[in-house]
Length: 324
Image (cartoon, rainbow, N blue to C red; front, side, top):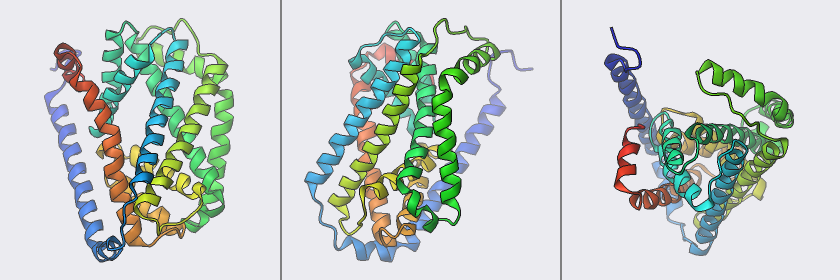
């Protein structure tokens, strides 16, 4: 019998094996997709002329979006009684963000909780604010994707527009009702998990403010993606709303594919389908944009976290290894 609170080695091994199988299947899918589109990619690659000024502008916008998301997390955390200065919040958020590249995407929450506790902030409150922020971000992303691409979604999949608009209406109604719905849900969750019930409740202003900041962040991501596309594949044309919808939808599809680190392969495949379906590009150009934007965003996601991780005291890095 496995002692209470300990892990079952057989169960851990099975979960690890499943993750590796899913990763191998993802890799095989990427290889198959690229092989089938290799000729189109080679033809499109001949016309590539990188405009670095557009890529630099896109990078600045993405970093500004990161700052906004960090501030949104700080707002949620503050209402739960956790005051955290901006620079420590940047360090914690960027290091925890490295967890996106681990299958399951759970390590990021654990790392964030540990690092926040080291700053004298409740790890439970920090993790709760992060989870809530992620849920708000996902909902806002779907809403932005739908609203910005509503008039063309049926060209990707018939009937998608009506379903997506319905989902958006549900999100808007849910966001407005958050101050009423959230307190009993959080209380139920805390009691079920044997956690202390929060002594303070999130205010309506904070909830709606965090939701608005997440909506703006998706718009920023889309504008940055449009600028990047201009710098790498100017032959892909369209209004900013198209790039916002394509980026948000493909990113969320990749994020929800929990078996794939960082949504690798899944996001690029979805982006290609959406861009081609919306008539914004040919298959070869879409694949090139998907691959190059992946490399670009990976650098912007990983580099800040690695820098902060390297300057972290060795004792704190050792503690983080235990959160995986």
